[in-house]
Length: 273
Length: 275
Image 1 (cartoon, rainbow over the protein chains, first blue to last red):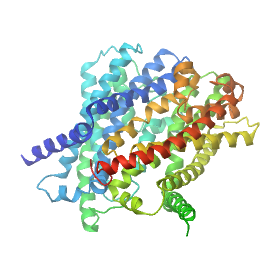
Image 2: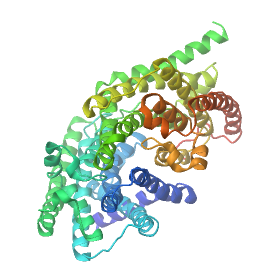
Image 3: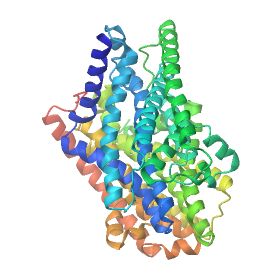
């Protein structure tokens, strides 16, 4: 019961922090304009060089779903920084009769919901204004792979949050670096075949590459040519391993990091200046 | 110590924090050079995958200059514009206002320190990016390039000072506005494609952001023939416009700082936190 309460309260808190505390007009503008502008930046690059339509569609879907990787994965790990160093409430959350792991899951949930609004609006914009041909012919494959991917991404965020408990001042850069690595090596805005061979090998080790491929195949009917040899079933298996594996890993690693932070007495340290 | 000397010391002190503070943590230097390179690489691969080899070098030059210059915009937004909000939250703003110095000196110090630190990192990013992706620059007039860069920076940090004064009395809203000024400005400033492609009228309006004109001018100077073909306006006109923007933003920043300070005092918002 306390777990459900924690989850609900933290999800509500996340929503309040990111939406209601700001002017509603500003929040709507911010939630929609930012992602669309970010994607439009790459859209204009593609238009400028008059790139083939199929590459454009791959880039568009990749960019849209990358929003989850950025907002959920790094958003969750950022919660620790924000609560510890900015609002200075992390110690109170630990003292409360709640479960911090589920508190973070709740915050991940609110970030997922907010990102989903931006994703839906951007997809609609892509289909109606940019003429991206979204056929959505594998709804079950999409739904299952999407859920597994989101579980994996949220769990990855919690692993990062655990590591953040032990870090001083580096959290922002580590999160941003990982975001950059995924942006580059998951082939978010370009086909993987253009990467050097070592880069292609690395990209095939990253679960997010398969998550983006699953969304492309189910929404567009085709994916990245470098992953042609990988079947839908193999993608699903990889995502299953990612989702469940990272969920288990997050439980273990977060407990380990929390215990270590308590032992070192650094749960409420302030390191920003 | 006279007033002038005191303000010079304030400028030095505020700049010192920006330079020494950001270099004290060595890992930060690595990250601030390495991070932009990741984004730049992704945009470079977009052009490598799709662009005609004849125009590729000009496009890659644009991406690398744009990617490195992006750090200045982020510094202006977060290191200048949002600073007073941040200092308010940390409890330092009261001390700034109690000190017998001009607020403009604080902003000038932040601007100079931020400009220096970011320049060093941007240069390292350009050097490494050019090395990794084998990009060649066409540099015919280095002095003009330096002058263009400095003019862009003066106009840009003038705008940063204006942001700082405007955000002085605002709370969390300023955080959201700062966030909002990221991607849309990346789009309008032509960081990764010629701003002319937006259409003359949109590009002309976007020229109010000093980086738009600065990037276009710098690309004209080092991006080869294609960059000149893609330029929004002739170099001389762009430099003149940057000069006008520099004076305008600096003047507006000083006026706005006085006005917003008085307003914030009247409304009792100078020391309000978490709002």
